Image (cartoon, rainbow, N blue to C red):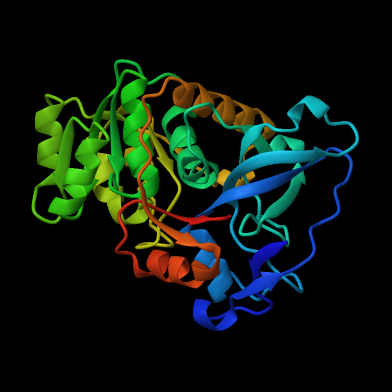
Length: 327
């Protein structure tokens, strides 16, 4: 099969190779998926660059997210799955061979039915951005009638989180860093978009909520935003956070948070429990089947130009998702 791989970490242009390699052997409980699209996430480029440590396998095919069609199944898997359109999660998590290839072999549970009307390119955005957003919004139950704050609303996760919260019946406030990102967040349906570089975030949120604050925060930058979060989170509110790059060891104001009844939910989408994974994949697919979710696939690249896709993600300037299409 044609694939992209690396055998050592470093700059994308230096270490990513494109060529022919063997398809993994199909085992019991597994499916062989013919890939059509592979999502490129920040975690993929960090792993390739060496930011997550030395290369863990002799040959690594990158990318955890992707979408394609099941072509064969192993022992114990219903043959009715052959021909099924699917999206992949954890394709490269603790595995040597990810989705940036013509084929991938994964356990059957990691190939989730891709609803009709959802493109392969969109499907390649569901394993990390889509699932992170869904779990962040719904991990503590229904959001109907609540007010949700989504920080970083122009990001890949944030754009989905705004939509998912709105579809669940919530009002949504989001923060962004500039006018272009504000416009992008607005297309997701946010009720209030705040430019945190120019506006008083606390005052804007309190004004919008009549002083009540928000019920949940889907948080991309826990430590950096903690001072604001503690001023705008309503009693018994939830902070569901998946990042804290600006303050990697934040100081936790324990008693102010305790006396407000705050639930702090730190999570990484790769390690969801079986029950939480089931909740996330089924809930996400239900929203997709409704046909109301939009996917911000901003840039697509060919398999041969995967290095450019990595460079685009590393630049931090792309608003939306980056996808490699596979012929």
